[in-house]
Every structure is written in C-alpha cells, then in structure tokens.
Image 1 (cartoon, rainbow, N blue to C red):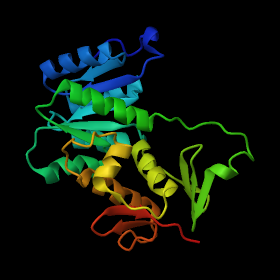
Image 2 (cartoon, helix red, strand yellow):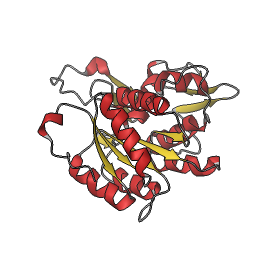
Image 3 (tube, rainbow, N blue to C red):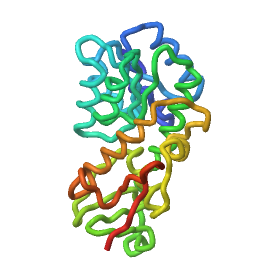
Image 4 (cartoon, one colour):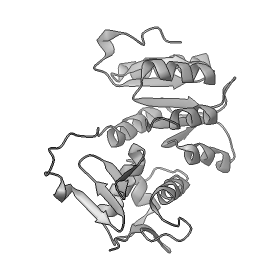
Length: 248
C-alpha cells in the first residue's frame, strides 16, 4: 500500500489509485503518473484496493481485472455502491464479452494488456477531463436556461444532475457526458465512432470495440427510460448509431 495517502503536499493534485497484483506494473504506472503531476496510491490485491479507496478518496481508479482476494469486477461493484468515481479497468482477457463485463458493472473505460503507458495516460487524461466537471453551486432561479425537461426527466447541465419527478438519478461522469452530447444535439444521429471521439476523446484512427458505447447507452436507458427495452428517449438510429428524442 502506498504510504503517502495523507500527504498534505498532494492535496491539490488529482489522486489516482492503481490496483494491480504485478509489482512491475504498479511501479511503472506510479512513476509515470507522478511525472504527469498526479498523486498516486497503490494496492496489490482487490481487498487492499477497497481499503485504500476508502482511505485515500481518489479521483480515479485503475483496476486490474485478475487480482487475488477480490477481482477487479468485485472492486468495481464495491465502489459503485456509493460512488460515481471514474474507473478504468486493465484486462488481459481475450474474450471481448468478459472485457465488457467491467463496463456493464460501471467502469468508464478499459485498456487491454499489454498496453502502452502513453495510451493509458491518454485514457486517464480523457476520462478525468470528462468526469471532473464537479457539480457547481448555482444561485437559485439562475438555472432555468440550463435545465432541459423531456417527459418526466429533468437534466440540469449546470450542476450535471438528472432528475425524474424530483428524484435524482445517479449517473457516472461519462454517462452524463454521453447524455449531454445527445441531448444538446437532439434529433441528430451519432455513430459509435463519433461518440467515442466526442465523449471518450479517442482519435479517429483508434481501434477499440465500439460496444463500449453500446454498454453505456444500455446503462443510460436502464436509468432513464420507463421501459429500457422499448426506449423513447435514447433511440437507435439503424445503420448509424444513436440519437436523443425529446418528448413532451
């Protein structure tokens, strides 16, 4: 476990938890992420990852899937019980369906082992940029122009909050960013690759399983739609991708 969890000099830095049972990977990522200006805490198994997470209050978590005591999926479940903190999973699994499992549990992105540290650093930067827009305090009566109402759903883009009949719906940062893209361009269809570029900041030539988008769309539908199997808000544009449709 990293010993600088309570290091006061790191308070102003974004903190990243790296959990991996391979010591060499922990050392490489800790060194490189610190060079990028992040504070880094580490864990070598899943149980320690949960313990360090609870103590360190990180801004982002990087999780290996295959860890002793508790795997990355279990850690993701534990974190998602109480937090929408961004999670990036590391996986060497060859089966795409198993890689997608982490996303279905609430991870924001994944990187396949072996990976380029530069690629992971780019993913960290992109996810933090998209999810680190903290909820802002806006004076009452000043938010009307920032609130989008569609059916029973209210989307407050200033506070990055979503409500159904005054009950708040918890979204992760990436889920909100995806929703915001579609809502702000209601009626316009986006391909999966375009969504990856706009929301995840992937370069146009980056190859990744576009089901990352499908999983996030499915998660959004499960939270927003009255009947996720028959969506009225987030529609599939056949042959293209997805679009948002406002309803009265």
